[in-house]
Length: 198
Image (cartoon, rainbow, N blue to C red; front, side):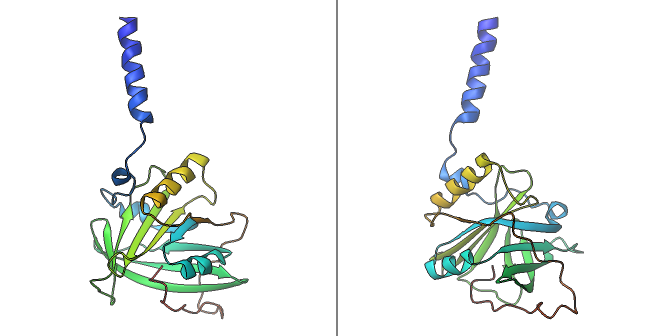
């Protein structure tokens, strides 16, 4: 009886430690919880397949996104803030949801697709964008925390590797996030959209 219980325990432990396949690691989120999405998320790390954009991405001091409460199951807005050279840049996006996939309103394009991806991190969010029919990809890891555990970062690095993207750039958690945007803030100006609505 004890031997059988130990065997079962080993089998269960073994099944949990088996590495996930790439298909499992980068799969779209099964179900998007809009209530969970609401609020501010700090950018922890990201990878961009286009080297010039990745280099520009690495220059950021910090970044975050803030999702607003929505009155619809299919439409939601968020403001992205980026701290760059001690200045904050803000831009607000409206997106249309279709399950875990989304499109930016007013930019419907057959060459663009995006989705929220699965992560085992309980307070993290993954945004995966593909432009130019998948030739260019952006993959962003956000969290309610500024710094994640090593195993959580290892999972993200494995996901990036599965997508054949460059190693991710990790944000410095000691750098302050931009404050909430206010109408009187002179630095709160929209940034150009040349990098694929990130």
